[in-house]
Image (tube, rainbow, N blue to C red):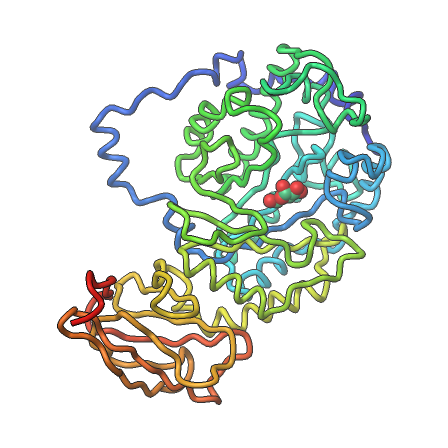
Length: 470
Ligand code: GLC
């Protein structure tokens, strides 16, 4: 039986949650840390370290939209499908072939170090048996069971960190959309005939308070039951950070689980940035992760066959690694839980390459700045090994410039030695010569070739001399 939001959420009691005795229970600002506490917390291991080393995660968009007729949530938001028809898709959400241990084995084979599952998308349908709404896999679909717990267990058993995607906004909750962002006009715009498209009517602060209790309540359920290593938030854009009270939400989440990390989609109160479907052109400050679809859709869509090739995802991953970031590659399982053969093939192909080039990827630092090598690169944490990635078949020797160190050895990762010569240089300006590397044709990798350059001592780069002539 399919339940509809207004009927089901009315009458739900939130009283069972101890922390939500009243808004004050979460409205308290975090107390400023005394100097001693701060010093102690600084000496603790960095909770983001695993994330900074991880390089590859797999994003999973799975929900009642996964029959493949249209996109996740946006389909009714954008008026392409009526809300009831969208929710009727839940009848097909069987999870009959849901084997999270198979997902975990495949993600691990691909080279992923973490995964992120949509525990609840903007449509408000939860994959766990939330007690705060009947819109969930147990009460509202033939899957009939909690799907988040088995995923968390399977990922952990395979040694992967567990991420949970959670949409702040909930387009099916009757108390949502009751409070307008400060910039909005308090009238419904006629061109948005859909209640989910834009906030309507005047602000109802009491409804917003109820919504915030519900929102915090669901997050507390997820945190206390599944202890995710990472909360991957989304849907913060329709309200301001003050309306969402993100500062106090951060304090709440960190209080429940100090080791859990948060993405930035909480009005900037998160731990790392999430550029979506584009790779930054210059290295961002701080930790970051590029999220990208394996074809053109987040959730499974029957008509979308525009899969990226293995070469393309390898290149995207190498470009992220070059700037110290991660790639979160999205797959959309079918509503029965199975992955399309095309998705599996891309992940396996990626795995062949990541397994061969492990040491050039994980736990590495940002590579060479622009101008030293015309490809992407990474640097070992010990700073004495450079990894140079290139994507095409070279037509002649490959150049590396501006490296002052003596070179101990150059080889293809997982392959033969590379011969090299050094030409030129301007010793009077401390400018090193150009290293020319001759790559054996047999060592070229069909997806991307990685050259390992072992240096004497930590990388010492020349910078532009003040004058260019002796
Ligand atoms: C976009 C899409 C949303 C998806 C998200 C993942 O915001 O609109 O559906 O879940 O990207 O980052």
